[in-house]
Image (tube, rainbow, N blue to C red):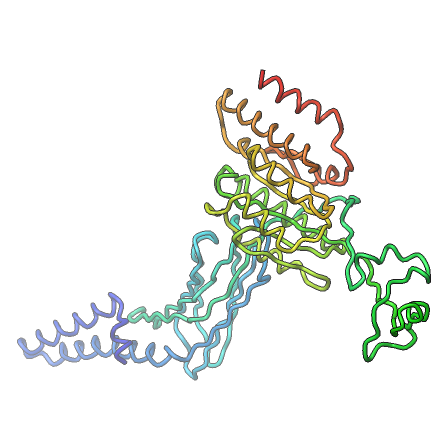
Length: 432
């Protein structure tokens, strides 16, 4: 009842004020009929407060998101199911779901009436153009009586999380050299096995199948030897996303970093579908391993929250890759690089790794005057040449370039002497 009185609207408080004025006038004038009017005016808001207050804690709400994960620019459907748990019908209900600014304005839905134990569902859509994880809710319900004399607000504490992941674009099938590396206990020697005499062996261990005993090696060493279990070679790839804040330009969804994040998502999904054992490196944001049987959701959820970091430098990215790399394919998505940074990346070619670089000309995401544009292009070409000379395959990326059109270049075995010569000539003419 107290909560109901606190929820009296302006209309309800006016009724009480009119009742008090009528009661005072009836006492002064001695009019009993006026006193009856005062009682009626006072009873109506009190009954409304009692009516709304009783139904305050008899509502149940359930929210569902369809789906919970959407790409940038796509819409998700939010379904609210409200049920009246009491025996009394409710008055008009105003539903307001709280949303972060990135998902749009707060939706407001009106339910005229819910009967005893009746349930009703309403739905609305949300759309986000920015990656991230967003809390949907809590739901706020405003309950009123039929006369609008009392209004109470109740917030349901439950929230749901909507994950907005980068946009993934399909890529053409390309044969990528250098992606295969061995696995298992005989990884380094498995390709050297050509026949019975050259079989890779090890000492017998309790529980080994006796049918694997290699008798020639046993006779030669004097100890029981068995053949190693050779594991098939597998495709391994490391996708390196440059999160250096000073390496990217632009703001919002059209920034160069967003291009790189979307490209990383597309490449990881493409390689996963091709059967690669994948590792995603994003600097300080941590690493994600997606082995066989893992879904794309783990990678996309990680990329949904990755952000630029002022503290990350190129040496830190290299260190993250070196911690757990043993060859295979390395695909880097880099913003602007200096010549010194490009030369440091040569260290990733250890262990025979094949390195492919998508080098973004992040200055193309800015409107620069002619002289500044020429200097930016020169720095971009110089960094690309340094990567080429260290054995990287370099694919230049401009503002209007699309990843599906660039992806076939990742499978080429060489960059071509014409491109290298053109870059070398550009650098030489600049030095002169």
